[in-house]
Image (cartoon, rainbow, N blue to C red):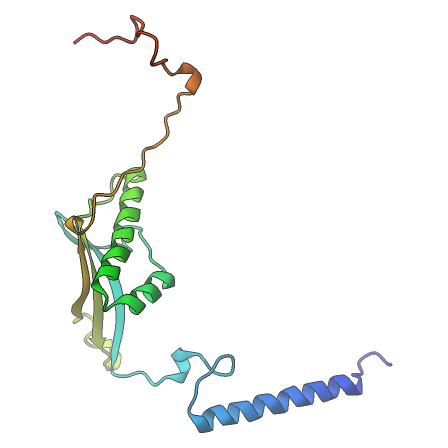
Length: 184
């Protein structure tokens, strides 16, 4: 075999794979299907309407609402997938948002300048797509779910471990020394 030549079996495999790909792609077009890996790119394969939409998570504090993402709290696709599957089940949505609230409060222990969280709202924001980006500042907002601090038991804050070792800790069976007793 020379350098740069392909064996007959490899050529046959390449031709067969190419024919299968073309036939399956033509079938997808005819059947009006969008199956991965042939064509499951929603960005390109779905005709988008005149409205753009997104779901966002807002925190509610005594000073007003704030975007949790702008406060450094990010939720990923796993959260939005879970939310979309349980969106109509109020109890499960409350449990999911309770977990988000607990996680946020845990982050506040390490980052106290974050605003206190009194509740969470999930919004669906939509706006009309117009030529030359007109109307982008007129967003319609619909509340999909709400959580307030009274919806769940209070979260237990995480306590930062102290640097003191057990060797220096006082023994509860011994009376305190004079240095450990504080006078009022």
